[in-house]
Image (cartoon, rainbow, N blue to C red; front, side, top):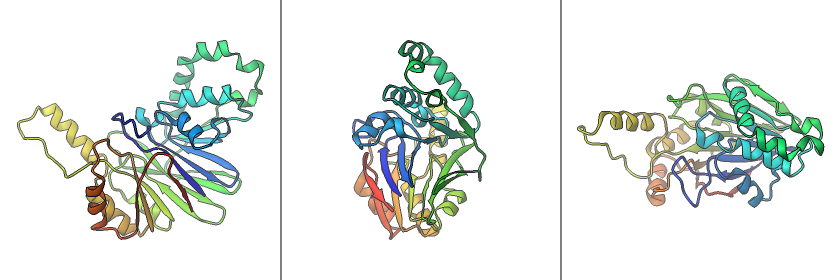
Length: 277
């Protein structure tokens, strides 16, 4: 398997990081997990063909994870897609796709894709999956795992396996949870989100109640550097790649904090980083 981190950012804009997205080449398949802002540009920069992506797996419907779906579809058609792009995700994926296509209806119409592309290339099959369900192809399978994003239910991570049984796990957005640990327990690699850039700085208790509630929600629905090292150690994964990184991250502090609990290979993700397993 060949993992390419296309976007390692989070909702806060960062000129160095595109929105969350990972590409996995496994067997003859081209798989994409999430399609955050800038995914098409990053695919091209990585010498990957947007029109050749076979499956898109969405973890959840926060905008930073799905906002470039329309761009991905239309760019694929502009570039001459010859086969369908199947979109897999949690409940709500079919309706989201319908609305995206409606929003771009005028553009799709005037480009007259149906005059020059096979009908099957314009089809966008949707599979709404439940936790534990698998999607399989020649030499690969992907299993949805339900994670603990709290503010979004359900939210998924994915375990991707090849025909030899080699696996990697992608957490999506989540607080530390058992499902991720089980998915990564015998995997070669875990790609996990990271929420905090430095030591936790609680808001003063007299802060605006709505701001306090938002900060609490954000903290509790993600994973901190203090937590992710413990999680990786407990599941025994040999390599940990951190993504979904904030623009204010202190890399040295993150490395030191995670390394206090985790002695495996630690990688702070960067856009276009390639990992072979």
